[in-house]
Length: 194
Length: 216
Image (cartoon, rainbow over all chains, first blue to last red; front, side):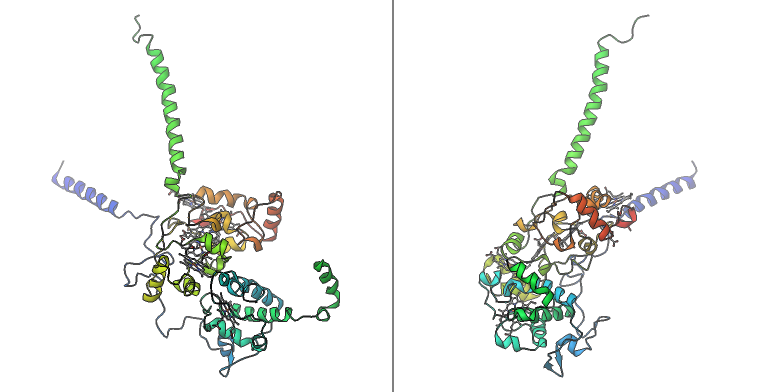
C-alpha cells in the first residue's frame, strides 16, 4: 500500500467516526415543545412572556366596548353585537365550566367550591345585580371583584360576552311567568313538569 | 461404510432443532412481554409531582370541568397546563395555609413556574393535535382513562403507534357524541358500532392512516 492510500484510509475512517457523532436523536429534537423547560433563560421558561407594551398581531384592543365592557369609561348596558341563540348556548356552556364551581349552575352562589370553604358570592338574582348593566358582568370577569378572581386568562372576550348574555337569561328565568313562554311551547313545559 | 455419527446424535439434532425454535419463540414472547410491561410503557405508573395534585379531588369531588384548567384543549394541538394563577383562583382561600400547597404559593410569590413532570410525551417525530380529536368526538377518557379517579396522574395507554392506528383504522368503534367528550363516566353503549357509524357520517370522520398524517 502506498503512503497516500494509507492517509486516505485514515481520513475516511476519521470522517466516519466524526459523522457518527452527528447522529441526532429524532425522538428528542432540538426544538421546544410547548411550555418545555429552557436552560437558556434565567426564569427557565421557553414560552417567553411578551415584552411590556408589545401588542400581538390582531390583539390591538381598540374597541372599547368589546374589550372593556364600557362606553366612555362607564359600564355599558348593551352588547357589542346582537345576541343570538348560539351565543346563549355558548354562554351556558362556559358559565357551567368557569363560574358554576362557585356560583353553581343556577347562579345562587352555592357551588361545590363554596361548600368546601370559599367565601360565598352573592346570588346573581339579587336586585342590585338584576339591575346591573351587562358591562358590569364583563368587567367583573375581566378584573375580578373583592374575593372573586379574574377570568381574563381563562375566558376570552367573546366568551365573556356570551356568559354575560347567559347571566341575563338566568336572571330572567327566575322571574319568568307562563305568559312569557310562546304559546306553542307551553304544552311542552307542562309535559316536562310532570 | 461405517457411519460417521453415532445413532444417539439423532436425538441431539432433534433436540437442538426443536429446542432452538422453542428458545427463539420464548425470546420473542419475552421481548413482546417486556415491550408491553408497565416498566417500559409506564402504563398505570403514577409519577411523582412537585405538588401532590389530585385529579380525583378536583374533578370528582369539586366537579371541575377539564377545560377550567386545560383551557386550550378545544382549539389547539396542546391541551395546556394551568398557570399558578389558575390554582390560586381557589387556593387563596382554600387550604390557604396548608404546607402541601407551599410550592404553589412560592411560585405565585416569585413568578417562577411550577415544574410538573410530564406523564405523556410523544417522541419529537410524531405530530399530535388535541383539537381535532376533541372536535370529532373522541373523549378524553378514551385516551387518558378515568382521570377523575386518579389521585396522581398516570398513563392509561401505551401511546404506541399501534395504539393510535387501532383507532384511526376504525374510528367508529370509539367515537361518541361531541357533547359527551368531557364526560368521564361515558361508557360505549351496546350499539356502539351503529352509533359510531352514524357519528362518522355526521362529523365526516376520515380514516387517517397515511404515514404523513402523524410523521411530517
